[in-house]
Image 1: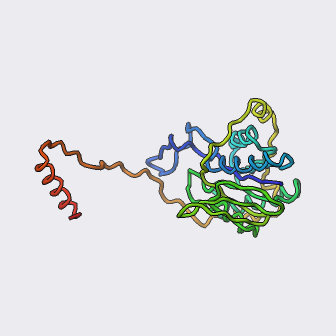
Image 2: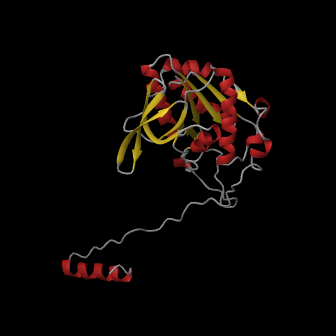
Image 3: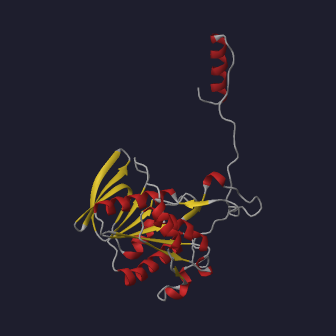
Length: 267
């Protein structure tokens, strides 16, 4: 099975800061990590490879040169090869433009590596939380889509997917080629091995520029090709929650609670 994995390098959300003037994320000095949902998709692909050693995993990302760090992490865990889409022309792309660029790059890679049986993506990126890019890639490529997957099992020309639904789980089968987005499973993802990490550090990662994607429409990429605009980003102000009543007399405490509930129009 020939699997393509789309990943993104994101700022560590435990270190997020907002520019109070520009109302944008401050990325300088903020550590970047592999998007956690993408790591779940990588683990799902790795489990297929465990059962089928002939399977291949190709990783694709779009971003600045530093995104190679996330790609090398994937190589050190289970991926066989990695490609980066990078160029100033792609900067400022929203989810629609990003998914279009990725779909064009996927078509280009299929000329090099042959058709992909499955494309795996994380459910969403933790820096945007839109959950739009994966489904949009499927639409651009005309592929069947399965979302909220926990695990995938390959069988002939199909994938058997265990996916999360509101009241539990369901098992669905989808014919390949297809696109699947993954959410957090019950199991932990694997760690890199020393041997793979050393090999990943020495692996050359090809960079795809706009010139390498001759069929792309320049009007559909970057800031000018993005129909959405982020007007403001901010951190909600913290509000004190709850009231502590230290009254030891039960009757008085009850009256105090009743009065508070009345003030809040709850009774």
